[in-house]
Image 1 (spheres, rainbow, N blue to C red):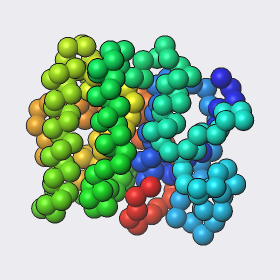
Image 2: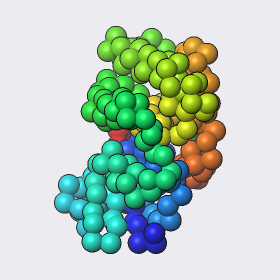
Image 3: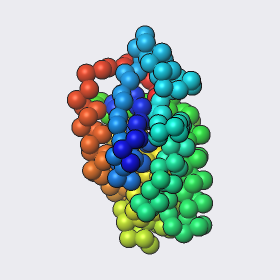
Image 4: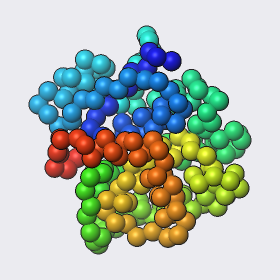
Length: 219
């Protein structure tokens, strides 16, 4: 499909953009990428040229327009059903969808205090209690998903092969590396699997090449 256009923000900072971009890449989709630098005087005006909510990511597909990262991922899964962006099993798929929605809507303390910044590294430090609660919940999700579905399905990701759920957690993987979060064996292996995925490495390389710098923000 050559008529797909994805509007995104800076690759170093835009966690929401990363999720939608990964879904398209893992699906093997051919798409045009439009990057709008964030935190600039004209950022909102430039995004409004594409959609009225003034936020990225935005997916254009002919006359169709989809916004919000999880909705974009769902749309991509429907366009490319053969790529298995959701688990095939009904029960597993329902759980993966529930966890993806939890990631999309929650973990506000982690977002606020540990914004995505791929190029930077910050030493491990004492976490605020609400941030640590978010970390504890995320690592519990990773362990249980790997133990219950990942290992059984023979892959390195939460439900075996790479799914939308892994795309939703990819920015968290980046954050845990940036902020030196101490992890157990299962979580560390999962972080390495996501980080070393070819699509993630492509995004990371581009993030390091960007000239733009934003002090601190969550996008």
